[in-house]
Image (cartoon, rainbow, N blue to C red; front, top):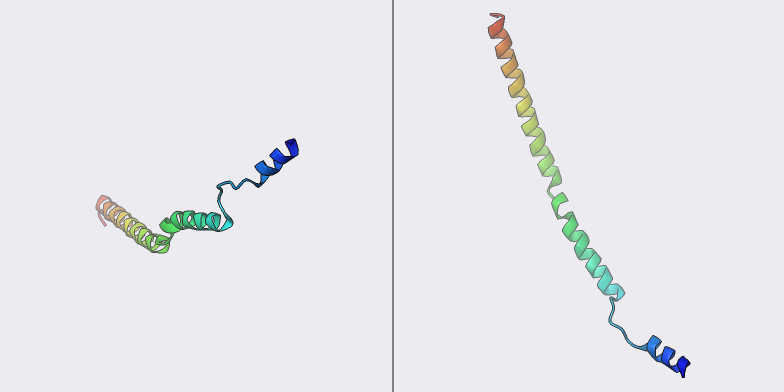
Length: 72
């Protein structure tokens, strides 16, 4: 009797993720996580341009200050 109960319990259909559902879920999660990296190269170029302009501005400002101080 005990063996029959184990057999029935083991063969009982249970709700669970299938392999296809798991693959689809992982694909969706990976896609959502990759969204911010899509525009990364364009943002990198924009940030480098901003940094270059700021560096030029600082160098120019320092040059003007030095030439004013030293009357050159």
